[in-house]
Image (cartoon, rainbow, N blue to C red; front, top):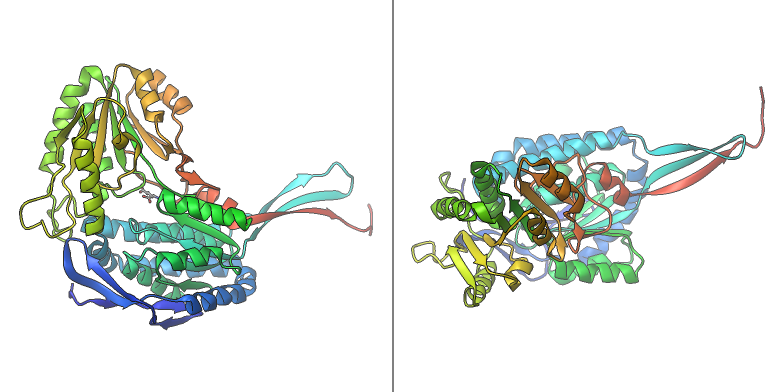
Length: 489
Ligand code: UN1
Protein backbone atom coordinates (compact mmCIF):
# COMPACT_ATOMS: atom_id res chain seq x y z
CA UNK A 1 0.00 0.00 0.00
CA UNK A 2 1.37 3.38 -1.01
CA UNK A 3 1.36 5.35 2.24
CA UNK A 4 0.35 8.68 0.80
CA UNK A 5 -2.22 10.59 2.82
CA UNK A 6 -5.66 10.29 1.23
CA UNK A 7 -7.94 13.26 0.57
CA UNK A 8 -11.29 13.42 2.35
CA UNK A 9 -14.44 14.65 0.66
CA UNK A 10 -18.06 15.08 1.60
CA UNK A 11 -20.97 13.90 -0.50
CA UNK A 12 -23.85 16.35 -0.71
CA UNK A 13 -26.74 16.16 -3.19
CA UNK A 14 -24.77 13.76 -5.39
CA UNK A 15 -21.69 16.01 -5.55
CA UNK A 16 -18.31 15.31 -3.98
CA UNK A 17 -17.00 18.46 -2.34
CA UNK A 18 -14.18 19.57 -0.08
CA UNK A 19 -15.24 21.21 3.13
CA UNK A 20 -14.39 24.70 4.24
CA UNK A 21 -14.41 24.13 8.00
CA UNK A 22 -11.56 23.25 10.35
CA UNK A 23 -8.79 20.92 9.20
CA UNK A 24 -9.31 17.20 9.73
CA UNK A 25 -6.14 15.28 10.44
CA UNK A 26 -6.77 11.54 10.42
CA UNK A 27 -3.79 9.89 12.18
CA UNK A 28 -2.45 6.35 12.27
CA UNK A 29 -2.87 5.25 15.91
CA UNK A 30 0.13 2.92 15.64
CA UNK A 31 2.35 5.81 14.46
CA UNK A 32 0.64 9.01 15.47
CA UNK A 33 2.95 11.22 13.45
CA UNK A 34 1.75 9.53 10.27
CA UNK A 35 -1.23 11.10 8.53
CA UNK A 36 -3.78 8.76 6.94
CA UNK A 37 -6.04 11.37 5.39
CA UNK A 38 -6.60 15.11 5.35
CA UNK A 39 -9.51 17.39 4.59
CA UNK A 40 -11.76 20.04 6.05
CA UNK A 41 -14.84 19.59 8.20
CA UNK A 42 -18.26 20.15 6.70
CA UNK A 43 -20.18 23.14 8.03
CA UNK A 44 -23.76 24.20 8.63
CA UNK A 45 -24.38 25.20 5.03
CA UNK A 46 -23.35 21.68 3.92
CA UNK A 47 -25.68 20.24 6.53
CA UNK A 48 -28.63 22.32 5.35
CA UNK A 49 -28.02 21.31 1.74
CA UNK A 50 -27.61 17.64 2.62
CA UNK A 51 -30.88 17.58 4.57
CA UNK A 52 -32.68 19.48 1.82
CA UNK A 53 -31.35 16.99 -0.74
CA UNK A 54 -32.48 14.05 1.40
CA UNK A 55 -35.98 15.50 1.67
CA UNK A 56 -36.06 16.26 -2.02
CA UNK A 57 -34.88 12.79 -3.06
CA UNK A 58 -37.15 10.98 -0.62
CA UNK A 59 -40.46 10.68 -2.52
CA UNK A 60 -38.77 9.38 -5.64
CA UNK A 61 -36.57 6.92 -3.75
CA UNK A 62 -39.51 5.66 -1.66
CA UNK A 63 -41.45 5.11 -4.90
CA UNK A 64 -38.55 3.36 -6.65
CA UNK A 65 -39.44 -0.31 -7.18
CA UNK A 66 -37.95 -2.33 -4.33
CA UNK A 67 -36.27 -4.62 -6.86
CA UNK A 68 -34.39 -1.61 -8.20
CA UNK A 69 -33.41 -0.48 -4.71
CA UNK A 70 -32.26 -4.03 -4.00
CA UNK A 71 -30.14 -4.13 -7.16
CA UNK A 72 -28.32 -0.98 -6.10
CA UNK A 73 -27.59 -2.45 -2.69
CA UNK A 74 -26.39 -5.66 -4.35
CA UNK A 75 -24.05 -3.72 -6.63
CA UNK A 76 -22.74 -1.82 -3.61
CA UNK A 77 -22.06 -5.19 -1.92
CA UNK A 78 -20.10 -6.34 -4.98
CA UNK A 79 -18.10 -3.12 -5.04
CA UNK A 80 -17.31 -3.36 -1.32
CA UNK A 81 -16.26 -7.00 -1.70
CA UNK A 82 -14.04 -6.20 -4.66
CA UNK A 83 -12.19 -3.65 -2.52
CA UNK A 84 -12.04 -5.70 0.69
CA UNK A 85 -8.25 -6.03 0.74
CA UNK A 86 -7.52 -2.38 -0.04
CA UNK A 87 -10.20 -0.91 2.20
CA UNK A 88 -9.45 -3.43 4.96
CA UNK A 89 -5.86 -2.18 5.02
CA UNK A 90 -7.02 1.40 5.06
CA UNK A 91 -9.38 0.59 7.91
CA UNK A 92 -6.48 -0.90 9.86
CA UNK A 93 -4.32 2.08 9.04
CA UNK A 94 -6.79 4.58 10.42
CA UNK A 95 -8.51 2.60 13.21
CA UNK A 96 -5.86 0.17 14.48
CA UNK A 97 -7.53 -3.26 14.46
CA UNK A 98 -5.44 -5.97 12.79
CA UNK A 99 -5.39 -6.31 9.02
CA UNK A 100 -7.32 -9.61 9.20
CA UNK A 101 -9.97 -7.89 11.31
CA UNK A 102 -10.03 -4.90 8.96
CA UNK A 103 -10.54 -7.03 5.86
CA UNK A 104 -13.07 -9.18 7.73
CA UNK A 105 -15.03 -6.08 8.66
CA UNK A 106 -15.18 -4.84 5.07
CA UNK A 107 -16.47 -8.25 3.93
CA UNK A 108 -19.02 -8.14 6.71
CA UNK A 109 -20.27 -4.79 5.40
CA UNK A 110 -20.75 -6.40 1.96
CA UNK A 111 -22.76 -9.23 3.56
CA UNK A 112 -24.99 -6.71 5.30
CA UNK A 113 -25.72 -4.93 2.01
CA UNK A 114 -26.51 -8.26 0.38
CA UNK A 115 -28.91 -9.19 3.16
CA UNK A 116 -30.78 -5.89 2.87
CA UNK A 117 -30.81 -6.10 -0.93
CA UNK A 118 -33.04 -9.16 -0.45
CA UNK A 119 -34.99 -7.55 2.36
CA UNK A 120 -36.21 -4.85 -0.05
CA UNK A 121 -38.57 -7.35 -1.70
CA UNK A 122 -39.90 -9.08 1.42
CA UNK A 123 -43.59 -8.60 2.31
CA UNK A 124 -44.46 -5.02 3.20
CA UNK A 125 -47.33 -5.70 5.53
CA UNK A 126 -49.88 -8.00 7.07
CA UNK A 127 -53.58 -8.58 6.51
CA UNK A 128 -55.98 -9.04 9.42
CA UNK A 129 -59.54 -10.27 9.47
CA UNK A 130 -62.16 -7.65 10.19
CA UNK A 131 -65.08 -8.00 12.59
CA UNK A 132 -67.19 -6.24 9.93
CA UNK A 133 -68.36 -8.11 6.83
CA UNK A 134 -66.89 -6.98 3.52
CA UNK A 135 -63.84 -5.38 5.14
CA UNK A 136 -60.16 -6.28 5.43
CA UNK A 137 -57.58 -4.62 7.67
CA UNK A 138 -54.15 -4.16 6.18
CA UNK A 139 -51.08 -3.03 8.06
CA UNK A 140 -48.69 -1.47 5.58
CA UNK A 141 -45.05 -0.63 6.30
CA UNK A 142 -43.83 2.59 4.78
CA UNK A 143 -40.46 4.35 5.03
CA UNK A 144 -39.99 7.05 7.61
CA UNK A 145 -38.35 9.76 5.50
CA UNK A 146 -34.95 11.42 5.85
CA UNK A 147 -32.92 9.59 8.49
CA UNK A 148 -29.89 10.99 10.36
CA UNK A 149 -27.21 8.33 10.85
CA UNK A 150 -24.45 8.96 13.41
CA UNK A 151 -21.77 6.27 13.74
CA UNK A 152 -18.73 5.54 15.96
CA UNK A 153 -15.07 4.85 15.21
CA UNK A 154 -14.81 1.21 16.25
CA UNK A 155 -16.51 -0.41 13.25
CA UNK A 156 -15.84 2.21 10.57
CA UNK A 157 -17.74 0.37 7.84
CA UNK A 158 -19.81 -2.44 9.43
CA UNK A 159 -21.87 -0.27 11.77
CA UNK A 160 -22.62 2.33 9.06
CA UNK A 161 -23.58 -0.57 6.79
CA UNK A 162 -26.08 -1.97 9.24
CA UNK A 163 -27.76 1.38 9.57
CA UNK A 164 -27.52 2.69 6.00
CA UNK A 165 -28.39 -0.58 4.23
CA UNK A 166 -31.76 -1.07 5.99
CA UNK A 167 -32.53 2.64 5.78
CA UNK A 168 -32.10 2.57 1.99
CA UNK A 169 -33.64 -0.86 1.50
CA UNK A 170 -36.91 0.23 3.09
CA UNK A 171 -37.01 3.44 1.03
CA UNK A 172 -35.56 6.11 3.31
CA UNK A 173 -32.95 8.70 2.47
CA UNK A 174 -29.92 9.29 4.68
CA UNK A 175 -27.68 12.06 5.97
CA UNK A 176 -24.68 10.41 7.60
CA UNK A 177 -22.14 11.81 10.05
CA UNK A 178 -19.41 9.25 10.85
CA UNK A 179 -16.83 9.52 13.61
CA UNK A 180 -14.14 12.04 12.75
CA UNK A 181 -11.57 9.42 13.81
CA UNK A 182 -12.32 7.16 10.82
CA UNK A 183 -13.40 9.42 7.96
CA UNK A 184 -11.57 7.54 5.20
CA UNK A 185 -13.69 4.39 5.42
CA UNK A 186 -16.79 6.57 5.42
CA UNK A 187 -15.69 8.04 2.10
CA UNK A 188 -15.11 4.50 0.80
CA UNK A 189 -18.61 3.35 1.73
CA UNK A 190 -20.16 6.42 0.13
CA UNK A 191 -18.07 5.74 -3.00
CA UNK A 192 -19.48 2.21 -3.16
CA UNK A 193 -23.03 3.53 -3.11
CA UNK A 194 -22.34 6.19 -5.74
CA UNK A 195 -20.66 3.55 -7.95
CA UNK A 196 -23.67 1.29 -7.45
CA UNK A 197 -25.93 3.96 -8.95
CA UNK A 198 -27.61 5.42 -5.87
CA UNK A 199 -29.51 8.50 -7.08
CA UNK A 200 -28.26 11.94 -6.06
CA UNK A 201 -29.28 13.12 -2.62
CA UNK A 202 -30.40 9.70 -1.35
CA UNK A 203 -27.23 9.50 0.75
CA UNK A 204 -25.18 12.46 1.93
CA UNK A 205 -21.95 12.10 3.88
CA UNK A 206 -20.76 14.90 6.14
CA UNK A 207 -17.49 14.56 8.01
CA UNK A 208 -17.93 17.02 10.81
CA UNK A 209 -17.41 17.87 14.44
CA UNK A 210 -19.51 16.45 17.26
CA UNK A 211 -21.47 19.69 17.33
CA UNK A 212 -22.36 19.30 13.65
CA UNK A 213 -23.67 15.84 14.61
CA UNK A 214 -25.81 17.49 17.29
CA UNK A 215 -27.22 19.94 14.77
CA UNK A 216 -27.94 17.11 12.33
CA UNK A 217 -29.89 15.21 14.99
CA UNK A 218 -32.00 18.27 15.80
CA UNK A 219 -32.33 19.54 12.25
CA UNK A 220 -35.99 20.33 11.45
CA UNK A 221 -35.73 18.40 8.18
CA UNK A 222 -34.81 15.09 9.81
CA UNK A 223 -37.52 12.47 10.45
CA UNK A 224 -35.64 9.90 12.58
CA UNK A 225 -32.22 9.39 14.17
CA UNK A 226 -30.10 6.26 14.53
CA UNK A 227 -26.92 6.37 16.62
CA UNK A 228 -24.21 4.06 17.89
CA UNK A 229 -21.64 5.42 20.32
CA UNK A 230 -21.05 6.39 23.90
CA UNK A 231 -23.75 6.34 26.56
CA UNK A 232 -23.12 10.00 27.41
CA UNK A 233 -23.65 11.20 23.84
CA UNK A 234 -26.52 8.75 23.33
CA UNK A 235 -28.43 10.03 26.32
CA UNK A 236 -28.10 13.63 25.16
CA UNK A 237 -29.37 12.64 21.79
CA UNK A 238 -32.32 10.68 23.24
CA UNK A 239 -33.27 13.76 25.27
CA UNK A 240 -33.05 16.00 22.20
CA UNK A 241 -35.17 13.61 20.14
CA UNK A 242 -37.64 13.28 23.01
CA UNK A 243 -38.14 17.04 23.03
CA UNK A 244 -38.79 16.90 19.30
CA UNK A 245 -40.95 13.74 19.52
CA UNK A 246 -38.58 12.28 16.94
CA UNK A 247 -38.06 8.51 16.62
CA UNK A 248 -34.60 7.51 17.83
CA UNK A 249 -32.62 4.30 18.00
CA UNK A 250 -29.40 4.22 20.02
CA UNK A 251 -26.83 1.53 20.61
CA UNK A 252 -24.60 2.56 23.50
CA UNK A 253 -22.24 1.14 26.08
CA UNK A 254 -21.62 -2.31 27.43
CA UNK A 255 -19.83 -3.96 30.31
CA UNK A 256 -20.25 -7.49 29.11
CA UNK A 257 -19.63 -10.44 31.38
CA UNK A 258 -18.22 -13.84 30.54
CA UNK A 259 -19.23 -16.39 33.19
CA UNK A 260 -17.01 -19.45 33.41
CA UNK A 261 -18.62 -22.17 35.50
CA UNK A 262 -16.80 -25.04 37.16
CA UNK A 263 -17.73 -27.64 34.51
CA UNK A 264 -16.66 -25.46 31.55
CA UNK A 265 -14.30 -26.66 28.84
CA UNK A 266 -11.33 -24.62 30.03
CA UNK A 267 -9.39 -24.47 26.75
CA UNK A 268 -12.46 -23.28 24.90
CA UNK A 269 -13.35 -20.75 27.60
CA UNK A 270 -9.80 -19.35 27.71
CA UNK A 271 -9.73 -18.96 23.95
CA UNK A 272 -13.14 -17.28 23.78
CA UNK A 273 -12.56 -14.95 26.73
CA UNK A 274 -9.25 -13.95 25.18
CA UNK A 275 -10.96 -13.21 21.86
CA UNK A 276 -13.82 -11.36 23.50
CA UNK A 277 -11.56 -9.20 25.62
CA UNK A 278 -8.71 -8.43 23.24
CA UNK A 279 -9.83 -8.71 19.61
CA UNK A 280 -10.19 -5.30 18.04
CA UNK A 281 -8.13 -4.18 21.07
CA UNK A 282 -11.22 -4.49 23.25
CA UNK A 283 -12.90 -1.65 21.36
CA UNK A 284 -16.28 -3.26 20.75
CA UNK A 285 -19.39 -2.43 22.68
CA UNK A 286 -19.80 -6.23 22.81
CA UNK A 287 -16.25 -6.84 24.11
CA UNK A 288 -15.79 -8.99 27.21
CA UNK A 289 -14.87 -6.50 29.91
CA UNK A 290 -15.93 -8.51 32.95
CA UNK A 291 -15.03 -12.09 33.81
CA UNK A 292 -16.79 -14.08 36.50
CA UNK A 293 -15.13 -17.37 37.27
CA UNK A 294 -16.36 -20.03 39.65
CA UNK A 295 -14.12 -20.70 42.65
CA UNK A 296 -12.97 -24.31 42.16
CA UNK A 297 -11.45 -23.59 38.75
CA UNK A 298 -10.56 -19.92 39.20
CA UNK A 299 -6.83 -20.28 39.86
CA UNK A 300 -6.27 -22.67 36.99
CA UNK A 301 -8.41 -20.67 34.56
CA UNK A 302 -6.77 -17.38 35.42
CA UNK A 303 -3.28 -18.89 35.15
CA UNK A 304 -4.02 -20.08 31.60
CA UNK A 305 -5.72 -16.83 30.63
CA UNK A 306 -2.87 -14.69 31.93
CA UNK A 307 -0.28 -16.80 30.16
CA UNK A 308 -2.11 -16.37 26.85
CA UNK A 309 -2.87 -12.67 27.37
CA UNK A 310 0.72 -11.87 28.27
CA UNK A 311 1.94 -13.72 25.16
CA UNK A 312 -0.31 -11.80 22.73
CA UNK A 313 1.78 -10.11 20.06
CA UNK A 314 0.93 -6.42 20.31
CA UNK A 315 2.22 -4.10 17.62
CA UNK A 316 1.73 -2.63 14.18
CA UNK A 317 -1.65 -3.96 13.03
CA UNK A 318 -0.49 -3.98 9.41
CA UNK A 319 2.14 -6.57 10.33
CA UNK A 320 0.52 -9.98 9.80
CA UNK A 321 2.15 -11.45 12.92
CA UNK A 322 0.37 -8.92 15.12
CA UNK A 323 -2.50 -10.21 17.24
CA UNK A 324 -3.55 -6.93 18.84
CA UNK A 325 -3.12 -3.40 17.51
CA UNK A 326 -3.31 -0.04 19.24
CA UNK A 327 -6.42 1.66 20.58
CA UNK A 328 -7.81 4.36 18.32
CA UNK A 329 -5.93 7.43 19.60
CA UNK A 330 -3.39 8.66 22.11
CA UNK A 331 -6.22 10.29 24.00
CA UNK A 332 -8.00 6.93 24.32
CA UNK A 333 -4.74 5.31 25.44
CA UNK A 334 -4.22 7.92 28.14
CA UNK A 335 -7.79 7.67 29.41
CA UNK A 336 -7.51 3.89 29.71
CA UNK A 337 -4.13 4.18 31.43
CA UNK A 338 -5.57 6.70 33.88
CA UNK A 339 -8.49 4.41 34.77
CA UNK A 340 -6.20 1.40 35.18
CA UNK A 341 -3.76 3.37 37.37
CA UNK A 342 -6.67 4.55 39.49
CA UNK A 343 -7.93 1.00 39.97
CA UNK A 344 -4.46 -0.40 40.68
CA UNK A 345 -4.05 2.08 43.54
CA UNK A 346 -7.21 0.89 45.30
CA UNK A 347 -7.09 -1.72 48.07
CA UNK A 348 -8.03 -5.25 47.07
CA UNK A 349 -7.24 -4.72 43.39
CA UNK A 350 -4.66 -7.00 41.80
CA UNK A 351 -3.29 -6.31 38.30
CA UNK A 352 -2.71 -9.87 37.07
CA UNK A 353 -1.15 -8.84 33.76
CA UNK A 354 -0.61 -5.67 31.74
CA UNK A 355 -1.61 -2.28 33.02
CA UNK A 356 1.49 -0.35 32.01
CA UNK A 357 2.86 1.48 28.96
CA UNK A 358 5.29 -0.34 26.74
CA UNK A 359 8.78 0.99 27.23
CA UNK A 360 10.02 -0.02 23.79
CA UNK A 361 9.53 1.59 20.38
CA UNK A 362 5.75 1.19 20.71
CA UNK A 363 5.84 3.98 23.28
CA UNK A 364 4.86 6.60 20.71
CA UNK A 365 1.82 4.67 19.48
CA UNK A 366 -1.57 4.31 21.13
CA UNK A 367 -0.69 0.91 22.58
CA UNK A 368 -2.16 -0.50 25.76
CA UNK A 369 -1.08 -3.85 27.18
CA UNK A 370 -3.66 -6.62 27.33
CA UNK A 371 -4.72 -6.14 30.93
CA UNK A 372 -6.43 -8.46 33.41
CA UNK A 373 -7.31 -7.04 36.81
CA UNK A 374 -8.83 -8.96 39.68
CA UNK A 375 -11.19 -7.11 41.99
CA UNK A 376 -11.98 -8.29 45.50
CA UNK A 377 -15.41 -6.71 45.42
CA UNK A 378 -17.30 -3.80 43.95
CA UNK A 379 -15.10 -1.25 42.21
CA UNK A 380 -15.62 1.49 39.60
CA UNK A 381 -13.74 -0.75 37.16
CA UNK A 382 -16.58 -3.25 37.52
CA UNK A 383 -19.10 -0.65 36.37
CA UNK A 384 -17.53 1.82 33.95
CA UNK A 385 -17.04 1.02 30.30
CA UNK A 386 -13.38 1.57 29.39
CA UNK A 387 -13.40 0.70 25.68
CA UNK A 388 -10.00 -0.93 25.57
CA UNK A 389 -8.21 -4.22 26.31
CA UNK A 390 -8.98 -4.31 30.03
CA UNK A 391 -10.72 -7.26 31.66
CA UNK A 392 -12.02 -6.98 35.24
CA UNK A 393 -12.30 -10.28 37.13
CA UNK A 394 -14.32 -11.47 40.11
CA UNK A 395 -14.84 -14.93 41.59
CA UNK A 396 -18.20 -16.54 42.39
CA UNK A 397 -18.94 -19.47 44.64
CA UNK A 398 -21.81 -20.95 42.61
CA UNK A 399 -23.97 -20.51 39.51
CA UNK A 400 -26.49 -18.34 41.31
CA UNK A 401 -23.87 -15.90 42.51
CA UNK A 402 -22.15 -15.91 39.11
CA UNK A 403 -25.34 -15.00 37.24
CA UNK A 404 -26.20 -12.36 39.83
CA UNK A 405 -22.79 -10.79 39.29
CA UNK A 406 -23.34 -10.88 35.53
CA UNK A 407 -26.52 -8.85 36.08
CA UNK A 408 -24.75 -6.48 38.46
CA UNK A 409 -24.34 -3.72 35.85
CA UNK A 410 -26.30 -0.79 34.50
CA UNK A 411 -25.54 -2.14 31.03
CA UNK A 412 -27.08 -5.17 29.36
CA UNK A 413 -25.71 -5.62 25.88
CA UNK A 414 -24.22 -9.12 25.78
CA UNK A 415 -23.02 -11.92 28.04
CA UNK A 416 -21.39 -15.31 27.65
CA UNK A 417 -21.79 -18.38 29.84
CA UNK A 418 -19.36 -21.29 29.59
CA UNK A 419 -20.93 -24.53 30.76
CA UNK A 420 -22.56 -27.73 29.51
CA UNK A 421 -24.91 -27.86 32.48
CA UNK A 422 -28.43 -27.58 31.12
CA UNK A 423 -29.76 -26.16 34.40
CA UNK A 424 -27.20 -23.38 34.31
CA UNK A 425 -27.92 -22.68 30.64
CA UNK A 426 -31.66 -22.40 31.19
CA UNK A 427 -31.11 -20.27 34.31
CA UNK A 428 -28.91 -17.94 32.23
CA UNK A 429 -31.51 -17.76 29.46
CA UNK A 430 -34.19 -16.86 32.00
CA UNK A 431 -32.23 -14.51 34.20
CA UNK A 432 -29.33 -12.78 32.51
CA UNK A 433 -30.71 -9.44 31.43
CA UNK A 434 -28.95 -8.82 28.12
CA UNK A 435 -29.89 -8.36 24.49
CA UNK A 436 -27.41 -10.97 23.25
CA UNK A 437 -26.51 -14.14 25.16
CA UNK A 438 -23.78 -16.55 24.08
CA UNK A 439 -23.47 -20.06 25.45
CA UNK A 440 -19.89 -21.31 25.05
CA UNK A 441 -18.81 -18.50 22.75
CA UNK A 442 -17.39 -15.01 23.25
CA UNK A 443 -19.56 -11.99 24.04
CA UNK A 444 -18.89 -10.21 20.73
CA UNK A 445 -20.37 -10.93 17.31
CA UNK A 446 -23.53 -10.13 15.40
CA UNK A 447 -25.04 -11.70 12.29
CA UNK A 448 -26.81 -9.55 9.70
CA UNK A 449 -30.04 -11.57 9.74
CA UNK A 450 -30.78 -11.64 13.48
CA UNK A 451 -31.74 -8.88 15.92
CA UNK A 452 -28.92 -7.05 17.67
CA UNK A 453 -29.20 -4.67 20.58
CA UNK A 454 -28.98 -4.35 24.30
CA UNK A 455 -31.08 -4.25 27.45
CA UNK A 456 -30.97 -1.70 30.29
CA UNK A 457 -28.68 1.29 29.64
CA UNK A 458 -27.08 -0.30 26.57
CA UNK A 459 -29.76 0.65 24.09
CA UNK A 460 -32.87 2.69 23.49
CA UNK A 461 -35.51 2.18 20.83
CA UNK A 462 -36.01 -0.67 18.37
CA UNK A 463 -33.24 -3.19 17.78
CA UNK A 464 -30.93 -3.30 14.80
CA UNK A 465 -30.20 -5.85 12.08
CA UNK A 466 -32.29 -8.56 10.49
CA UNK A 467 -36.01 -7.99 10.30
CA UNK A 468 -35.87 -6.16 13.62
CA UNK A 469 -34.47 -3.15 11.75
CA UNK A 470 -37.77 -2.77 9.94
CA UNK A 471 -39.40 -1.63 13.16
CA UNK A 472 -37.24 1.47 13.21
CA UNK A 473 -36.79 2.18 9.51
CA UNK A 474 -40.48 1.95 8.64
CA UNK A 475 -43.71 3.02 10.21
CA UNK A 476 -47.01 1.29 9.79
CA UNK A 477 -50.30 2.56 8.49
CA UNK A 478 -53.37 0.53 9.41
CA UNK A 479 -55.74 0.52 6.47
CA UNK A 480 -59.41 -0.42 6.87
CA UNK A 481 -60.31 -1.56 3.39
CA UNK A 482 -63.94 -1.79 2.38
CA UNK A 483 -65.41 -1.49 -1.05
CA UNK A 484 -68.30 0.88 -1.58
CA UNK A 485 -70.45 -1.83 -3.09
CA UNK A 486 -70.20 -3.27 -6.55
CA UNK A 487 -71.07 -6.71 -7.84
CA UNK A 488 -71.91 -9.35 -5.27
CA UNK A 489 -72.02 -13.06 -5.91
C1 UN1 B 1 -19.74 -7.25 17.06
O1 UN1 B 1 -19.65 -7.65 18.22
O2 UN1 B 1 -19.21 -7.87 16.13
O3 UN1 B 1 -20.16 -0.80 18.63
C2 UN1 B 1 -20.50 -6.05 16.73
C3 UN1 B 1 -20.14 -2.02 18.78
C4 UN1 B 1 -21.39 -2.81 18.48
C5 UN1 B 1 -21.22 -3.81 17.42
C6 UN1 B 1 -20.53 -5.05 17.83
N1 UN1 B 1 -22.45 -1.90 18.12
O4 UN1 B 1 -19.11 -2.55 19.11
